Length: 381
Image (cartoon, rainbow, N blue to C red; front, side, top):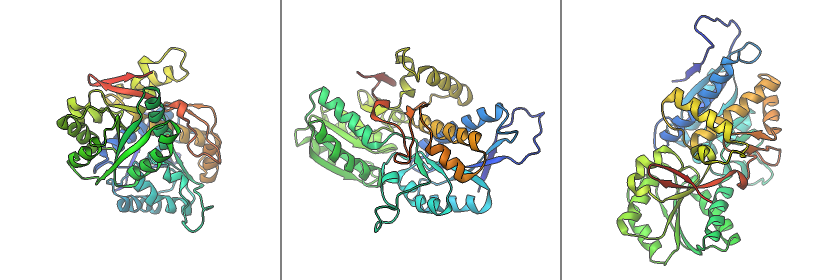
């Protein structure tokens, strides 16, 4: 079912102009539902803010939602359903790298700007046609910082703290494979050697065999590249096995769901993150601090829960898209161009400088390293 959600300034006000519709395609069910739901809420908050300010030229914004069910095939069906039934000017989402890859070709064919929340770099870097290396996406953007930069941040931290040999365990799907490619590039840059690598299937519920083999290589640390329940399973398995090597997880782990799936086994796990979960620990000189604290306060007030790093990605995609519509109106091609020319935008995930050569716009400098501790997060040096 297509669900249309719009926010009005007050029930007593009536707007006769047709709303400007934005498609929201998220993983609202399935293994990534915790991510998709958080991102959906972040987008709704941004749309709410725009409508409270009077909309765009008197027209309210309306989000038309569909659920990918965390499934690539269902994601394409959801996208087609919206585009066939609704006049939308942009797409926000989807959540997972695999669903994004499945949707990407159709988005480019339909020529509609899509600001994705997917973590993998492959959605921007892989040619649309394997036979044509120049067939790069023109209408696709992504709000999470580059997975290569997240991996680089981890390896940089390891270099600083004397970690030389690592094991890498990853989910055998789009996001995990993207991580494997990135660690092979980033680790050598920082003097880190990959001495073991292991894969698991997204629905696996025990990784002790893989972790035992990794630990047998005498590693100084382990990197796990996955999202969802597997984040917690790996942390629990490491504790059960008595492995002393510290665990690092991906740039999607800095989220309240991490503690729900990992429990006390999450204590001490480190990860790259946006600043949203450590906003109050930032120095006052940080240009993002006030925006982050204000946004966190608004999010808490509206949804009565703490936002995680996934919320930051959803919020930035929404704010940049809405700003583009404010500048150029509800024209798909003009919105695409406006997004592509977004520079110096102080967001929650970082400072966005998007260009024709970079449809992400963030850098490694926008990433912080954090440690899971006492049910919360500590900003690391």
